[in-house]
Structure formats: C-alpha cells, structure tokens
Image (tube, rainbow, N blue to C red; front, side):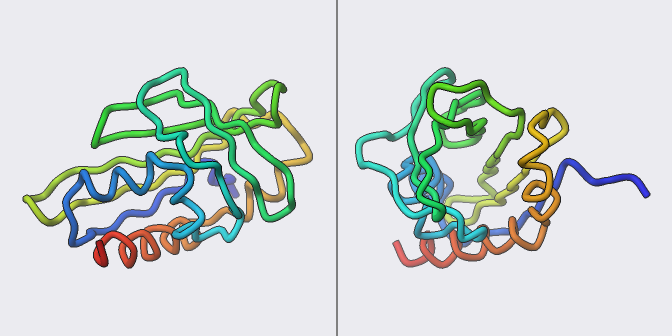
Length: 148
C-alpha cells in the first residue's frame, strides 16, 4: 500500500473570500478554527502579507514554531512550512486555497503535504494528519467566518 503524503479536504463557506482569508492570514485567529487541536496562541500583529515572511505560533505542547511563508496570493492562497525557531524546515507544508464562487460563497481547499518531510520524529504525526482533520479545520473556519 502506498502511503498518502499529500492530504486534502475542501468545502464551501457562505462568506466572502476576503473575510475567510483574513482569518487564515492572521495567525492570532488560527487557534479559533484549528481542527488538529494543535495550536494555542500567536501574538497579534503577525498578519501575513508576502512570501518570505515568518510568523510564530505556540502549540498545545508548549513549543513555539516559526512558520515560513512559501506561497502567497492576497485573498487566494497562503502556504507555510513550520520549523523549530532558528532551525531548518523539516519539509512539511500547510496550504490554504480560496476561490470565490460569488460575492458571498467561497470554495476552500486545505492541504497538508509531507512529501519532503525528512525528520523521522515527525513521521507519525504526519501520518495521523488525515483529510478528516483538515475537514475539521474547514468546518470550524466555516463556523467562524459565517458568524462574521
């Protein structure tokens, strides 16, 4: 059996793409809708705006991760690779893609890609990141975005 190293989930949210994107691009908002129950907090003022930026996120384990933005298109796409602060990126990537279906409906695609993951200590957690967990993030994001 071949191991699935790119996991994806998608859904439609009844909210404008720019509203949804603000929730994703602002790390301080991410713990509100994290379906992996892995995030606890991020300092305000880290809103992502370009490839090459970094933001810090505190995990439920108490560790802080430095997230390197590797893909960005305002209102449409954001992806980052996490790493321990000041350490090389171990090679996994989180991506969010938004496509406005109309003024108030947005298709959201969430991807976890660990094809380049080279840290054996992270493999089990990567394997346990399922499409259901990604879908949980979309459903929580939906609830927050539709309440805005």
